Image (cartoon, rainbow, N blue to C red; front, side):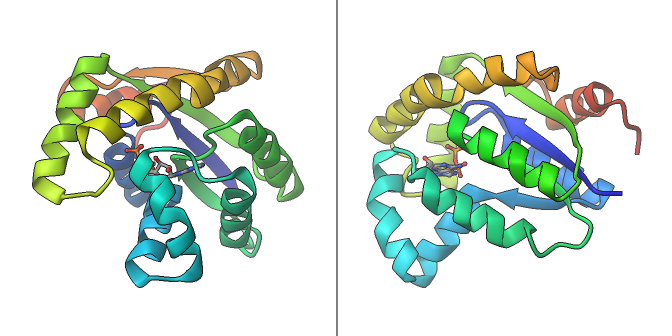
Length: 190
Ligand code: ADP
């Protein structure tokens, strides 16, 4: 059965880790727009060269580029089962996704809002910077990503509250604990 799940929340909340596990245990394809962009940068594609300075600043890539990427990933799937991680990030992206999913007759199972206090987010991202060396994990960029989240992505919480899709999940605690909260928020057991 075609279905979609969205992970929403600030950078550092643990969306990526949880999305990956949910995808592998429930047979979904995880679609992380951040990972796709970083792969373009690593391969030095035209798109990668264009978006690298944007990611390094912590700003958002223009909606049209992101929407083309997402469309190309899912429009060809005969029976999409997708977990979106890091997308949508703006209201325009959310509205475009609604249309895309409706066209593909793919219902939205839920929007998981994973949250954590801001200082915890900064701590986790600085820690990840030491371990993985992601070029956008430095303090100035991290602070900017959090500001961009508040200004551009937080309004989606209202949007998905109105549509009745939002499910809040506390991102503090062990990864297993958070995963259990996600399963109960979605009403699934695996
Ligand atoms: P994080 O959740 O840690 O911020 P992501 O890997 O989701 O990291 O995204 C990293 C960067 O990639 C963002 O700061 C932004 O520049 C770009 N990006 C990813 N997804 C989107 C999107 N849906 N719209 C615009 N820009 C995006």
